Length: 383
View 1 (cartoon, helix red, strand yellow):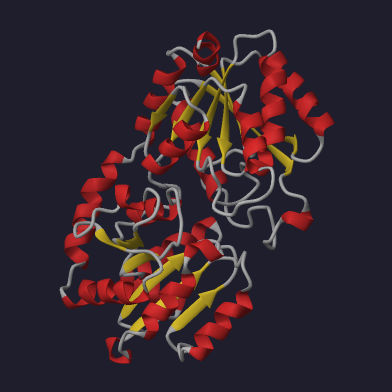
View 2 (cartoon, one colour):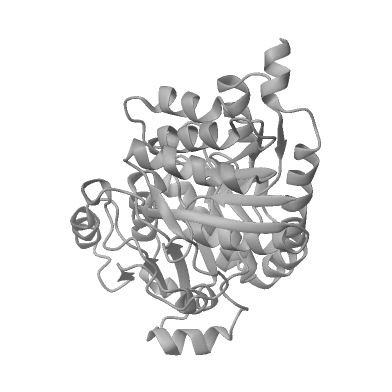
């Protein structure tokens, strides 16, 4: 097939750009694949971070043509026409935010017109974590020209079936992020980061309210100082950083929390995961998490909350622990149990077995299977 991916991609940064690089690489082993990305992804007034472009080494991706302006309808039509001239078999849109619904929906409509091109959405969310006006109408506009959908957790599957009945879809779990290299020696990683504590937990990724860092800080405060436990908080703050620093001070955790509040370049990601005994995802809400898949790449157990699809990936008592959301005492108890029972080696061995299920080959097979089936648009037209 001739496939074009329309989404964020290198030289833009972030987990979704990494995902698309790996998807393109996997599809490219069997198909002709190109990627088109944004020249303006977010207006600066709407972007909470410091930069929208990758600052580290380009590990996998070839820079994609930056053609799409997310807020210019005339651009959407022009890009759609350009893609239509290329006569691809399949357009793939990675969908994570209704903000992009008008842009993606228009490009898809124009690119499909008078061609046999099919449209597939890979959905991180159907209903976003942080609700805004017009979410439903923007998503509905985006999905109307779609033929197929990929969902990556049971939670998103339920959302899709409720929001878009009759959709042609496959459930294909989020593959492991193997873009950041192999695990390194834990002590060497800690030396590189200047960590002297004997026990280290990692909270990684953009800091937003729904990710529950405040719960983890309260759980840490409930643990005895004699545990020698240090928390690494690594990622750019998309929420008010000062309120977390104030909470750290109020809880007396200044010497137990190390904050790296910048975006982490690709080549540095591995040292943080390799330095940790486990990764903690104390989310208040979620669909799935790419952070869990980075942790699995580095053979790290995960302690997470029972929200969204996290419990589908993390096997309670085998590859980590699952605890109720917004319950600092239960989270603290799980952390204590992890160390008191010495579960790291056992859990890590099971992670190495389990992560084989989350392959990019499985994702490619799901896409191929969908494209060969009857499109959603045809099925819904017949209903």
